[in-house]
Amino acid sequence: MVNIDLNEAGRQATVAIVGGGASGTLTALHLLRASSDPGLRIVLFEADPSHRHLGVAYGTTDSRHLLNLRAQMMSAFPDEPDHFANWARRAGRKWKPTDFLPRMVYGDYLRDLVAQFGDDRLTIVGARVEDVVAREGGFEITTTVGTALAESVVLAYGVAAPRRLASAAGPVPGAAWHLQSPWDLAGLARVPDDATVVIAGSGLTAVDAAITLLDDAPRRRVVMASRRGELPRAHVEQAMPEWSTRIPSGPLAADEVAALVYEQIAEAKRQGVDWRAVVDGLRPQSQSIWRRFDEGQRRRFLSAYVHAWHLHRNRMAPQVAARITEYRDAGRLTLHGGGLQSVEDLGTRCRVHLTNTTVDAEALVNCTGPLSDITMTTNPLLRALLDRGTIAPDSLALGLACTEHGELLDSRGDVVPGMYSVGPPTKSSNWEAMAVPEIRNEAAGLAKHLTSTVAVSRAATPVTGQ
Image (cartoon, rainbow, N blue to C red; front, side, top):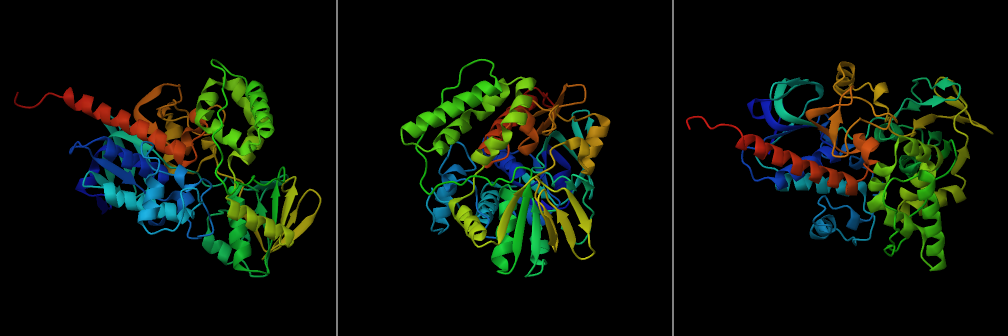
């Protein structure tokens, strides 16, 4: 494995991976494991050294930010489900497979895997990719430090930055009190110790931000504001029993699936089984269900059921939920529905008008979630590819238009040969594409496809002199 800016070793690649967070790293690892071909050349581009192999999810340095899945669910390799739990044990970590580990520990795991499996076939380039243009036999990749060539390109840019924060009255001004990224731990640390902070959003990222703010300064107060004013549900300490819900074959309707899930939850309750077992039992089938919805049914799901699904599917670790309950009981954390109505700039502070109250705050933190509509992106690479029609948004503004196998579609709806995506950008086709269990499966499938394609390509290439 070579860590460089762009030199001769990184100019010619079999596969170029744009994005060195968890999605890109898992793709590189699966490529290395899938092929022993010494001619394989992988170039991984990641401009931010602090997030290399981590991304925003595992780049946190706050040990109170915990994984939302148990250790036994977080293996990098589908064929070795205990890999992460065993790694943690070998590393001297005193956790059980059913525990919820700090997210930064998972970052250590990914970096350790790169050190273990990386060899001279993998080049890591500290540069931002600004454009990718199709050329005969592959792609020309323009970066901030030079140009590279690759036979295939994988867009693995992960979770996009949050959408621009806006109230019902319009965009929130970009003042010093406006923290536009919830992952800016240095910015959170600069908030005064006796501050009142408004967090826009009440999902898992908002929960992490609240923990950092409230644990670090006992006099701080946090007000969470979201449209519905609900927190994610909590995991329970004990692992759930297995529960399998039989889904009918053929095309599906969102209302039909929702009714079936509610029936199964009621049946589970009659048997003394928690609803969480039903939701967890649906996870292996969720991608299949999504693919069997036509576009109208997908829209129905997004309008009628997506909020309830996220609340119950993406849950807080038990320790995190207990902390949040303590803050609320102490009056340090309050939750409001209705979202932001308007925001006034008071110089060093802001006045936030919520549905039924007004809060004067020293800081306003944007935790409204990542921007999935790529037509609104400011990413130079995505902007260039969109403007040229090389890539396209999906019709539901969930990410990139692509096939279920990650093949990108252009503005005409045609497959772009040799160009792929993995992870969150593929949500439009795969729905579940944000967490490690699904990303690792995507990465493994893509690696198998790419290495077989390389083998076929080389077999078809005449050997000079024969």
